[in-house]
Image 1 (cartoon, helix red, strand yellow):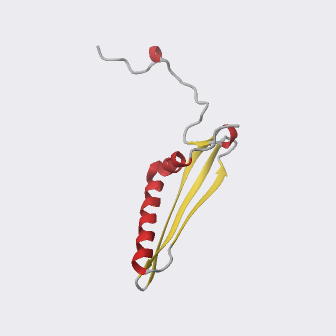
Image 2 (tube, helix red, strand yellow):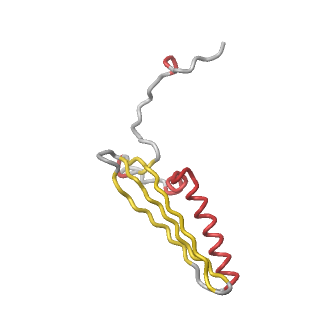
Image 3 (cartoon, rainbow, N blue to C red):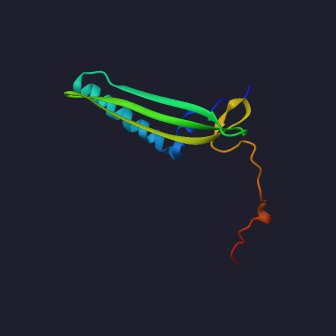
Amino acid sequence: MSTPTDTAEFLNELNGGVFASQIGVALSEVAAGVVDHGKAGKLVITLDFSRVGESSQVKIKHKLDYKVPTKRGARSENASLDTPMCVGTGGKITLFAENHVQMFDRAQAPIIPRS
C-alpha cells in the first residue's frame, strides 16, 4: 500500500501556508467567542477538487467559513482560494510531482561557481 497524503504538510502547502494560518486564527477566535459569551460557534473547512486538463494534477478550492459568537449575536467571515496540487501513487497529494526528473547534474548546472 502506498503512503497516504501527509495531512499537516498538505494543509501547510495550500496557498503557500496562508490557509493553515487562517485556520489557526479562526480556531482561536471561535474558541474565545464561545468561552467569552457562552454560545456555540462554528468553523467549516470545505475542499472541492477538480482535475486540471488531462494531467495528474487537481485544483483544490479551499474555503474557510466560521462564525464567532458575540455579546449580541455573531460575527462571521469566510475565505476561499485555489491551489493546484499533484496526485501521485495511490492518490497521494503533494505540491510537487513525486516523479519529477532532475534537469541538471552538478557538472551541468547553469550557475557557474565563482573562483
